[in-house]
Length: 205
Length: 112
Image: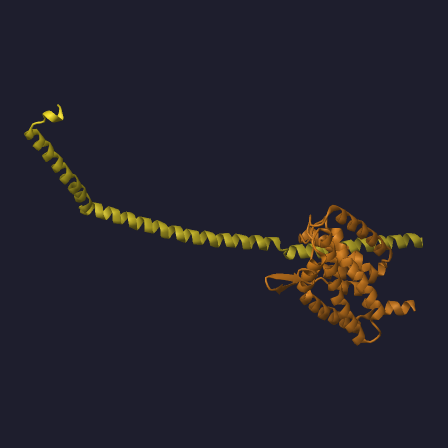
């Protein structure tokens, strides 16, 4: 799910760039330097995840991971996603550079929402963490598909039509990401809860 | 010579020659076709044309196969390989390293 060059009207592309830059600034302000290695690892995973293709009838869809990135990084997820998408567009030709702003919003906003929801709802048990993690991972894909439909609607397509196609095409991704997200988060909660911000939260309290 | 002055003998001659011509010409043409040399030539021609057609078909098939292979190759070239993946991960780690460096320097300056 990437928007290619020249699909969006110039005004939308430029506007989304501005919003992305603003989000990047906010993301940088919340950056904790102790988290840099974690950001590096999560960004790398996000960067590579888009290469994992799931065959789906005549086409194929790939993992997106906005929900998981958001759950792991919180507000810094936006930075991680912009960096990952930038390198994807440079090295993989996934989505154009002019559409980078729109693509960043498409992945970054769901990541922020999912991160927020995960931190709010995760509870304190491993089970609740895994459950909320998997829900949030699925939700990330859903939101990304909706934002994709919104962006394409500004390019003259009908919102409902594109939204329907995007959602149907990403149902398998949603399922797979929910499984992956739930597994990763329950695993991390067991072996390294500070990666999920659990011990950091305890320190703050 | 005028036709109304044509003598009966002359008319007979004319008729005879015309008849002979009419008979001989088709016969000679038929004789030409009936010669064994001509038969082999034409059958050779047919065989050659057949051969060329077969050859054409084969080449056509091979060309299509090669075109398909080229398309596949193009597709493979467009797909990112191991090199791109390694490059991207390296970029990300490097950027974070630079960020960490800047952050520690800033911290060090503050402490001083």
